[in-house]
Image (cartoon, rainbow, N blue to C red; front, side, top):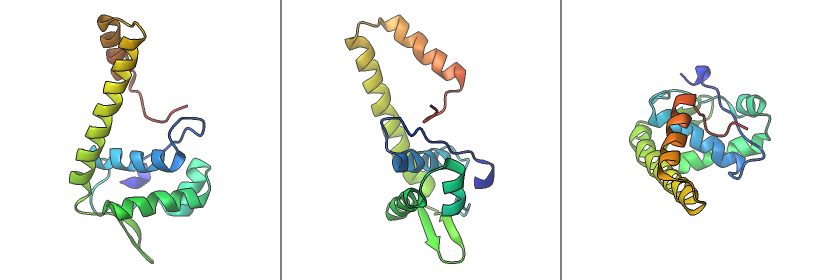
Length: 134
């Protein structure tokens, strides 16, 4: 359920805060931690949790609604749609592949050897790395 999930943002990171929020919700749906019908925290709750302006949360939720990932209903809140898992799996996997390809290309371009790149990836996996942690 959404209540057990912890969302974080890195205010100083290169990805805008509203995109970090959108991405984390999509990651949670793609991984099955959020399921169709689950509710997201209210705008006020999410704003307080992350220490960001409520307008930022509203923008994230609105964007996700336009993507048909969530549905907003007055008095009910923001819930995950039935189509969300399929939509999020495709989107997040494509995003992750692109980020990984870019990161590997940067490593190679800067002279990091193939074995070192593999070790870096293995170390990141073993560490339980989470997105947008400062």
